[in-house]
Amino acid sequence: MLEAKNQELNSVSGKKEQLELQSREDLLSQSKITERVQLELASSRKELDRAKDARSEAMEKAAATAQHRDQVSSDLSTTRKQLDSTVHELDSAERRAQAIHREKLETVARLREEIVRERGEVERVGHEKELTAVDLRRAAEEREFARKELASTMRLNRELAADKEEAQLLSEGLKYRMSEVSAGQGAILSGVGQSPRYRPSGSRAADLSPRIHAPQPSSRYYA
Image (cartoon, rainbow, N blue to C red; front, side, top):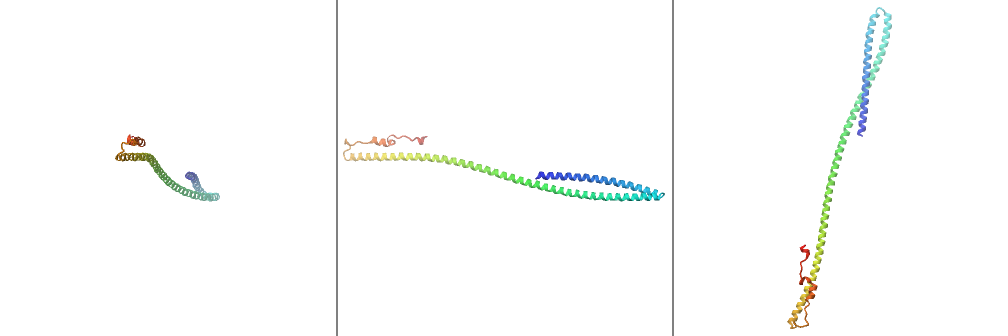
């Protein structure tokens, strides 16, 4: 649209220059005509001076001069009308050029405002994109942290389950061992502690709960 306005402005400027050139030519032609009229008027005065001696000849020449002057006046009137029309067209062309120039300035100002607004929108979108990227990166970091926490929690749960199972086995071994000790104490108190029928089953308890008879540190806590 701005390029079309520039082309239209250039076209109007070209027409204006042509009109100005034509006006100058008309003015030059009018000046030549005026000079010619002045020369002819001077010649007429001389002829009128000589017409005193030759009245008849002067009358004919005066009539011819008057006719020619009327023609010149008609030409001058036509030239004035053409000049007025040219001046009017030049004024119209100048007003149109000024209107086009104002419209061009308004268009340029509007385009600048649109560019500034679009630039601000681009900057805002870019800022929002950066914030979104930061949020995504933070969410990825939090997700990775949560995944690691979940893995650590699951590993700890497995270790606790293993400890619980081992503690249950240890508890059962202790209960079994205490029952044997209680049975042995009861046999001793009843006088049959050296009876060949009594045989402690410590080996079986050791098989059930090896940590009681051969404790070893867990590798989980000393890794």
